[in-house]
Length: 391
Image (cartoon, rainbow, N blue to C red; front, side, top):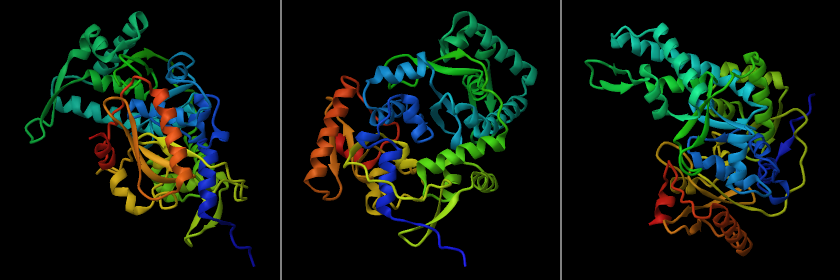
């Protein structure tokens, strides 16, 4: 008779989150790359999220430390990848993210764009696209870094306009520059450099760069799955499929290749952990965190029941399922926060978590305010509680 799977409590899952996501003070990272690796990837759809997610996981250093990692050391890079979403990952992990996910997205985007060019009827084709891309890279070599508008001003082909959905209700007229730049970025031939404006800006400059080293796709998916299980396990194949956007077949093969082990959860369900990772680990010291919208700790699972009371979800998520700024206490989401126009960091607990929690959250809010300084932050995806706190 085979032994029953190990049992992992909800408290243990929250302990793991504090340690492995580097949110407990004693577990914080020394570098931005370490902070990104601790959660596999930092969401980067909102430029401010990368900075604020890194801040919550770093022992010290201000926004300039994150800027240095992104634009000078290039130890962390942004890639269009999981779920066709922009993420920031360590340069060490980038080839695996590229091979497991970004390559497929890039191929699909190129096919779609070539289809639009063909339907537009102006004779623009793959040869024209290759010429436009070559010209853009040459200009970046000569003049870069450049913004998208600067690049299109310097490359005549990028000033071309096409019609999408001609004769249909959704007919639109659009320039090609954004599409061509997106393709070059998806292929790893250009990367986002320092933006115009502050660190909250998404008006990036672009630089020419070499594509990532080739890694077999199956090997890359296995590596991503292994790291993800370490950061987010116990979790299910459904969680991993949601997080990556991979097919269920690819998820099953990748998980099997990791040698993942099954465990039992407090709610009676089954989940997976990385090999040899079922043993309990010491609880970290009590900790509070103010995490930004789209932070990985809130977006790592399809099922967030172990750290989020379902009654709090309507206040903290937008209509599309994007999580807003959240307040955490010992591995559980207990409230939300916002920054008012005058710079004040305000927060609200959605349940009585005790005086120790309130004091820890207040201290963390002060730490966040000092880190942000004069910068003002408005999440791209706004949620009911965040709007209410700002009003």
